[in-house]
Length: 176
Image 1 (cartoon, rainbow, N blue to C red):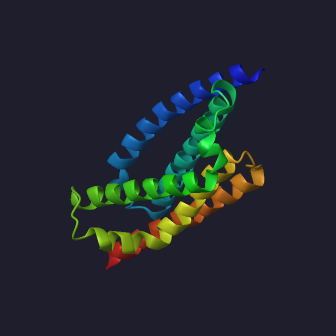
Image 2: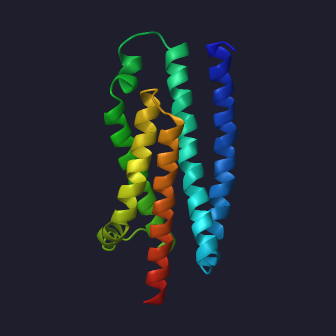
Image 3: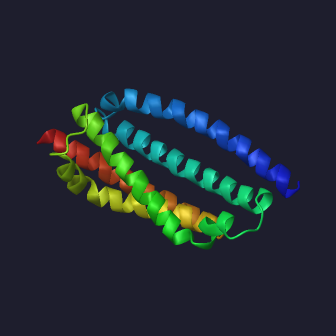
């Protein structure tokens, strides 16, 4: 299969995954409170949700790289993200973590309170660091086109640890 067809197929797969991720995200947040009544179910749901999210990032970034290399002219402007993957990966990771923190605040309080935001950031820092590192590695290695199965396994293991910490932390808070 030539690069154009491969990139187009990857784009279609990405759009399908995006639609499925939307459905998963809506159902995940609808049943979140019920799921945390059982630590095992909560762990499985959080882990699967995180793996799907990072996999969507992986497919999206792979499509982006293929699109830039296949369809865009070879000028400096079009290749700026591919030439500076660490900067882009860092900025994208920070953006994802901030959105995640704001989403957590919305789940807990129903709206974002600026007064409680520092507390939520502080409480979610250990988990955020692990998940952030996994997201950063996913984006950076994909943009550099050096992602291996070993790298992907390590990234998924990071999200496994993050799910254990997240569910354990929420269970601990529910007992207090």
